[in-house]
Image 1 (cartoon, rainbow, N blue to C red):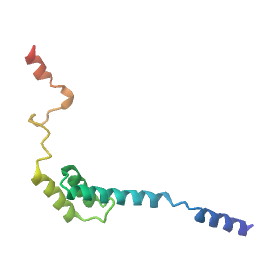
Image 2 (cartoon, helix red, strand yellow):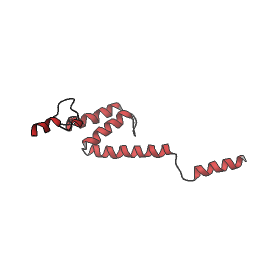
Image 3 (cartoon, rainbow, N blue to C red):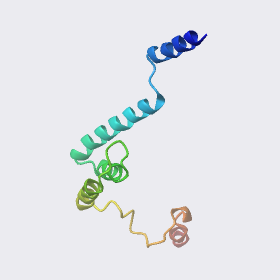
Image 4 (cartoon, rainbow, N blue to C red):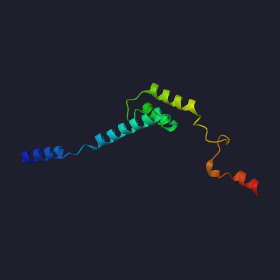
Length: 104
């Protein structure tokens, strides 16, 4: 009876399936490599993403210094934090109601 259990568990290991955690880990590592390639090419959004991935250790060993370098590089290229010329606290769900009132 125990031999059957052992042989079935060996079959599960040898059927070519990987544990889900290994598959996800591999995908995240490939995502980081792709993002890093685009970040080095000058893509600001990818520079921010790479910085965040370094800060959190997502797909790469955690390294706050490298994260800061990538975020700083992105912010020097262009201010990606500024959404528009709207005042602080502006809520996009307001649908620019103030501007529409002035048009009529």
